[in-house]
Length: 229
Image 1 (cartoon, rainbow, N blue to C red):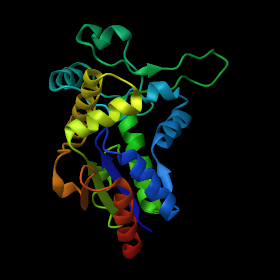
Image 2 (image 1 turned 60 degrees about the vertical axis):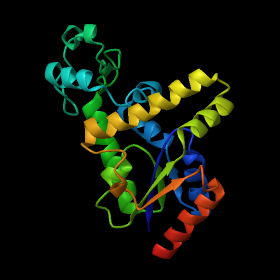
Image 3 (image 1 turned 135 degrees about the horizontal axis):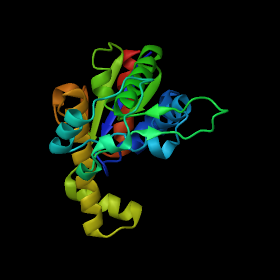
């Protein structure tokens, strides 16, 4: 019962490939579902969970946050808002407001998010038959013997053109989006998993959709998984 992890560059068609692989294998497609699961577990709106989802921070901001704002353990009591140094542009943990008659407020910070993501991904890794998209799953499930790690890439200009057409934005906006997402994924793995997103040794297979048709990429992954099973 294999689990497939799919790391992908924006505009590489990696999301499409992951969905098609899941459908071809009859596996669960695990993507935005992780946001929904964390939202349900913590009783936090999905848009608040998404603030942490696959987004990294610059080195200076990450250093200041670790220095000035200690990560809270699950169930910990948050500091007052004045203690979060908004002048540095640091993220605010989310505190759910509730009336006194209801259950206690839920607290979600980066540490809690990372703990939940890791736990959920390990659970999918144990049960198998899942295609997991992103969320550092290639690192979190690196030692899982049933995991098959795939990375989908494409040339920068081709990715920008795909994003421009798909989202109806200008060429300049498309380039900014692609560059931003590349930067986020690099920082996310570096800061929270001490890993290099470009390390080829993290993956069993890297596919360039500038040279390989996405449908052929789906066939390659499905064939390997079926052989492994």
